[in-house]
Image 1 (cartoon, rainbow, N blue to C red):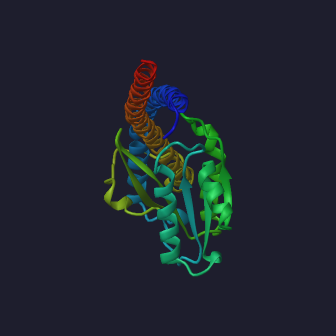
Image 2 (image 1 turned 30 degrees about the vertical axis):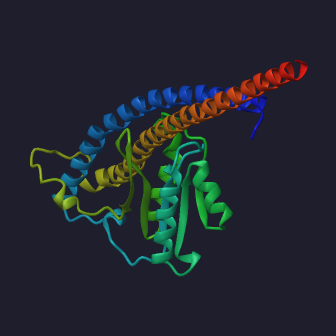
Image 3 (image 1 turned 180 degrees about the horizontal axis):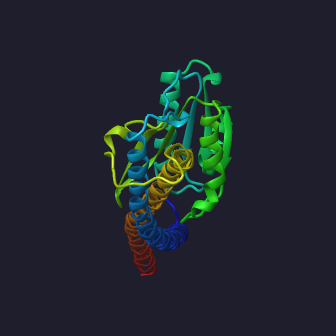
Length: 285
């Protein structure tokens, strides 16, 4: 059995750990609230640009590479993970989905490439020698579009130029503070627009519809990427809050167990000392 001094040291150390995890839980909760507002606040913009793009696409027979489904020779996977740990299973669920998808769909590394957003995803793919075309590390807790604009534009351009024939994104969708759902979506080619918006005869186009689509379609795809990043950030902070709350609860349980052990050991030590004193007095009589 550990000595009283060792037990006391462990109790003190665990109490300090509990204070740290408790503080981190509060910080994550604050970040999550703001990230949730950012994600929800972006939805009206995304819905509106989708409505406009759908309206134009449905009112014309103009073809565009981003709307055209073609033979898939190479697939791009954009993977959104965190830059830091202490987020529970947030990263592992996304990366597990990526690996399962690759194993199911591809026979060779030439058939796919990865766009990594976040250090954990980048390091994971790099360690396993998976093909990474583009990456970004150190995205802010509450990112602005300017931070990922270049990556989003270059990724969309890869599809337009034919470097990839399909673009998928894998991230954690924010459901609630205690629930995040791994989501895999096909971003390109853009499909189902005919189901998203009806023709609006009130629109007047200047310049023509083809030129407007040429500008709007890349912006629409980029907005989907940014929306997924905001969603993923809200999920990341929620996962961190949950992990820190669990760590705090575990520390509290451990402190209780150690305190019980400490008190029992102290009681046994006191009893032994009393026994020795009584024995010494009896020996002198």
